[in-house]
Image 1 (cartoon, helix red, strand yellow):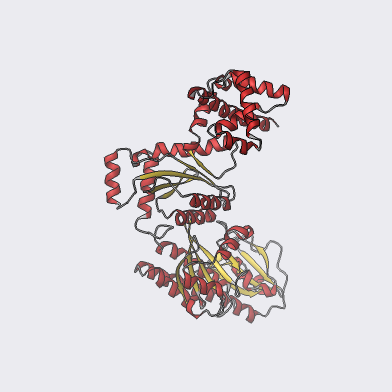
Image 2 (cartoon, helix red, strand yellow; image 1 turned 90 degrees about the horizontal axis):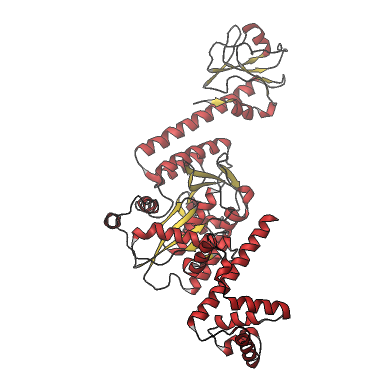
Length: 523
């Protein structure tokens, strides 16, 4: 048990204490200095009047709290390295003594609460026992939610009758989306940091609540909330809440999701696959059986790149991780390098339905994130290679400045090949000479023959569909196609010619995007 100088000055703030010298920052006891006594103990705070100090002197390495009734010499206590606090002459010594005694009593109470919580942890009494003790100590209802703001436990919550958010959480098992948006997204100025483990909240609440963050190392596990319902929350309550958060970090399961026994094993297993520490198929299959993992036949790797708003903000990262787990309904998810990596299994031919894809894009957009998807595969030993493909899909999308949030490697295989080719040779070598002739003709005559040919090929050489897409009459389209053949001699019924023309279109598009990126870099 100890009381700090900061706590003493807070307890004495009514009299505006002045700190004359600071050498010792805390003490474990206090004593009222009487006539003829000398302050000798370095671990004690001595209360007295300044006139007494002129005779008794300062204790070596000790602490003094003096009411001024006579001036002290300059530098008093410096040679003894003594901490000296001075109060003005009008401060009643009896009242000062009571304030100091209250400060030490609070410290004793916090120490007693700490001992009781420690005993509960030693007996493995669990989260609910700690919550019940906390409710008894703080005298106000407590609510524990995990990092995704889903209900974990409460104490005294059933007594709360006029706090809709608490009642919702206790009945539904999770907080409202309105509250999530208020705390996790919109209220960036209220984000807790490593240095500030508490925040005061009101906002959508009818009562003020103090929120403590439960951390294990740098990983947030949960939020512990005490509602100022039965009485105001004091500074001593805040200390007890901090201690309770520390013990809660030890009592909570070693995971951020709802499967405390399996999730750490799963995440460790996935990391081992990604690191290629596990590469033998038999060893992998053995671990799958041991961990009781069940996978459908079709596997995908989804790599989610975090948005700038989540980088460096562990609370929002873990909240998004839980959101992603709930959306995909998969626990096979881990944080790897700078990505969230998901092993997604399905028995369907397509990874997601069209509606699920759209909802996935909305979720990614909400958090400013984007995702790359691998090719489908069957065996877990393929995870490292498929992970690279998913990352490649993301990188290609960024390099070519694509605006979507979800990128499948199957949609960019050709682009990947072309980008690799561009590192070794001029990409224009891949463009059909006829294409260059059409583009030159369009430039001279301000025509649109090349645009027409691209549309025709992209619509499977269907004249009716192409004319609709270009908003022209089909006879006009027939005339343009005739001009293209006359000008270039192309055989549009030859499959190899059609492939080369389509390759030319993709090559020119990639080259245009790359040149655009270079121009922006130069600017």
